[in-house]
Image 1 (spheres, helix red, strand yellow):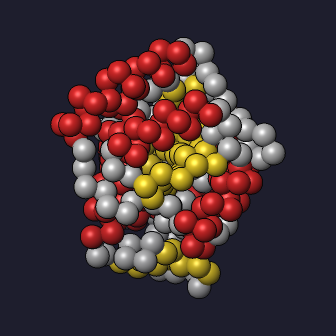
Image 2 (tube, helix red, strand yellow; image 1 turned 60 degrees about the horizontal axis):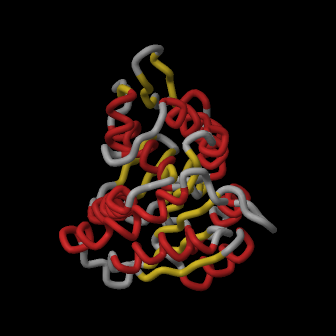
Length: 253
């Protein structure tokens, strides 16, 4: 959906990208990005910048189309608008998270700064991140690069955590709880892995934000709370303890 201030967004993306591209183009080879928005201008301009940055870009204009393209192309990253016809971004995210082949796909929303409700709904649906618009090309590509870089680092780490009936396999991005395999969105998986890496230790909110979301992404404190709530629903209330005013810790029951 087109947001206010978009004229500046459009001009800025075109006018400043070439300088940034010369300095920061990375080798992305066959990294696929699916861009989903019902506004042709958004698809054209954001798609242009991603393509010029070396990514293989696919587009869709609504949630239903996004699901079909995602199943066919298996992108590494999906950038979703929230308000779209036929199926909105939140519902599309929920459906994509049910597809096993897309379990490791990063999903980030494009939202206006005033749409706090959309950000919370997006995280509830399984989104990993969000990008506020209008966005400058340098910020856009930095966020995309940062998300994909953290994914690469995670894949290179070969660690498994076993705590009672909970097994976290970072190599395969799988979680088994009391014999039941769980499919967690990426950020829920990363948050669980962080807290479970040192049971009993209190992780501050700043530590969690820096480790799970990184310095390149600005998120609010409610983001952590939403993800903890979702993990409690899936793993169990007793496994996560809130330390008021400080953060959270994982408890082995």
